[in-house]
Structure formats: structure tokens, C-alpha cells
Image 1 (cartoon, helix red, strand yellow):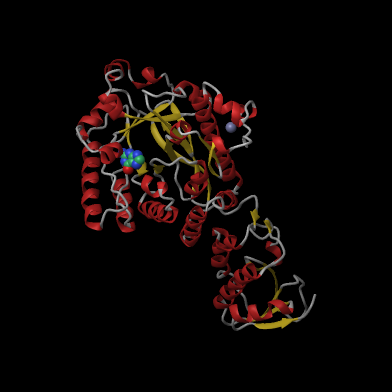
Image 2: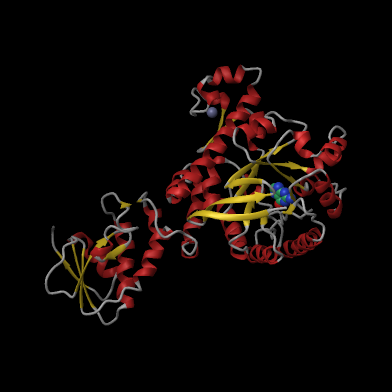
Length: 484
Ligand code: GUN
Ligand code: ZN
């Protein structure tokens, strides 16, 4: 079977990719809605018409189902679910780990998943919860890796293996797990056991765990974030380099009358308006939606629309190079998401290596913007400028006689030669009136330039209100200050 994952466009560590499985393709980042064959409130076929190219279902449910076991074996999943796209099956490890009673082995589930025609199969991994100590996380990782090894020998030619990355909360174990699955040649690599982190809003830990796994994984791995799919966190997850998501949230939340938005979840019962542009929201009021005999199904459809719409917006942001702006916007809806975002920004020095070199724009959105990859990269690149003699850095942007080189200054980046005035990021950055944080960040650029050119003599010309900051952040430069 033809199988491959290609990265087509990048932004931050996020990517637009093409996953090819046989004759089918899935454009990533993608949501694989979770289908429970017993409770199809939105049918797979309807989802396909909404643009869903792949879905995930649980092999364990088919295995135990009186109604679907034989049918799946005889007719195959695609016919039983009436879905022409890619079907991934989960082994049910996660359910087994939560509800106990393991009654199916690794070999059994892998063989069964292939017999029912699943295209992406998952071994019986052990999802180590965040509360597990190191000893347990290590022992369970060994079991998961052994089961992946066994699975590698059992995959036939009509399926591909998804190899889960476990390791609990321990970053070195996650990194090792990532490296081990990539070394085995596994391309689809779900990061597992993160549901408890998301349920408890532990986004900082989520970011640490995902970035650790990514450090071990090959950059060519197609990374699935198991059990993630709330629209408010997708931009953050994509920016870390996750490509696939699966979520039952659209249906589970609908059951409880919960209305998904990109800013968080609302109760339908508490709404006086439906703040969404999907056809269902535009043709109902909260009241008529609540009272409809189809209420749960309509709410599930809305929830799915919002989630798919957000992924489309994320893919567009990647094309435009505006993913940081979108992440910034989304992560301000909840303080714990903001913590996750800040953790991601702390990783900018390593994310910078994956980021693209030019973008449509850089919109300054507050202090956090000073830590973006573009700023880190600019400061790193400044060290490569070769300067000699007397160098002027003018906050007013005016060249002056008596200097060998005259540079202008643009926060949060720093000094730049006039020749780079139109190039990214200097030419495309939009900033509000200067504040202390951004000027401080720009001064770090001056310091980098000074440090790289110890023989040059630097003069900074600025307004009096910046003089002290410049002297403090860029020691060794002569500061001349006056009003404009
Ligand atoms: N679904 C959500 N988390 C997990 C996980 O860690 N492993 C598997 N197999 N399925 C999951
Ligand atoms: Zn809607």
C-alpha cells in the first residue's frame, strides 16, 4: 500500500501536511472525529460531506459488540460505518486502563483491527497516567515498546501502524519514547495519556510533554495528539508540531448541552445568543435549539462545525505565517492556556530551528511577542553582522556623518541596516507605540551585536526616556539622548 507523510508548509513548529494511505489522502492538521458505532448522532457519511477525511473508532467496541462484531468481520469497517475516507482504530488501551478488565491481547487486537479493514492500527499500549512515579512510567514504557515491536512484525500490507509515545510526566522518558518509535521506522506517532492533563487544564505540563516527545521524534513523523480536539487548544497544539487530533468532545459535550466555541465551552442553557455562523446557529435561538427534538444531534453538528472551522483557520494561518498571532489570541481565553502558551514561548530557541524564514506579517500583541521565534532568530542572526569602526544605532532612524556604519532600530528586534528595512521581520512588523518591554527586547539585539563585534565602537542615539534602559541592557555602548 502507498503510504507516506509529506510536510508542505510550516509555521512555528506547526505544519500543513499530506498523509497518503493507499489511494486516499488526508490534509493535516486534521481532526479524526471519534465514532461510537452504537451512538452515531452524526453519521460518518454526514461527516464526510462536512470535509472529514479520516475518523477513528474503537476496535474494542466492535470486538465486544453483538451487533457489530460479525458485520465488521464480514463487510469491513468502511461498509459498516458507510465511510469512504481513512479509518483508524484505537485498540481500546485507554478505555481498558480506565475501566480495567483487560480481556484482549496485543496480538488479538492488532489482528482484529486488520481483519475489519482498519487502515491505521494501534497496539495495546499502556497509557501511563500523570500521577505515576518514575519507576512505573519506565516499566510501562518498556511494555509499550515491546508491544510496538510485536506489532511491527504483525502489520500486513493494507494497514499502517500508529506507535504510541508514552512515558508519563517524565520528559526524558517521553523524549526516549519518541526516539525509540522513530528508530523503528514508525511514521504515525500518537502522543498518549495526555487526556488527564487536558481534563485538569494542565496545559503547561502538556506543552512540556509534547515538546519532549517531539525532541525524540523524527521531524518527518506525523504526530497525533491522542484524545485532543477542543477547538480552544488546537492552535497551541499545532504550533508545537501536532498533526492529527481525535476527539469525542463534539458528541460528549452535546449530550450534556454544552456548546463549543474557540474560546471555551458554554452551556446552551445559559446562552441568550448563539455566537456562531454555522447554519444551525443562524437558524435557531438558544431556546429553539434546546427544545428541538433533535437538540443533541444539532448541538453535536455545531460542535463539529466549530472544531473543523478552527482547523481550517489554523491551516490558513500556517499558509500566511500568522500562527503565533492565532495562538496568542486563543490562549488568552483561559489563564491555564496562557501558561501553556508561555511555556511554548520559553522553547522558542529550539522552535526557531523549525520555523520558516519569512512570513506575511508580525503583529505585536503584547509582552509575549518579544519571545517569539522571529525575535530569538533575529537576535541570533545579529551576531553574524560584521561591524568595524564607529557604528551608530539611531532610534530616530537617521544616518549621520562621522560614522562608518549607520543602523536604525526597531523593537522588539533591535538594530538593522537600512538595506533590510523592507525585509522580514523588520519590514512586516506592526508595533504599537514603543513600550519598555519591547525596547528592552530590542536592546538585547544591540547587546548581541556589540558582543559579536568587540572591536567596533557603538553609539546609540535615542530619546531621554530610553537612555537608562539602553545603558543598562547594552553595556559598552555610548548613549546620546535628546528629544526628537
Ligand atoms: N486515547 C487517548 N489516550 C490514549 C492513549 O494513551 N493510548 C491509546 N491507545 N488511546 C488513547
Ligand atoms: Zn454553530
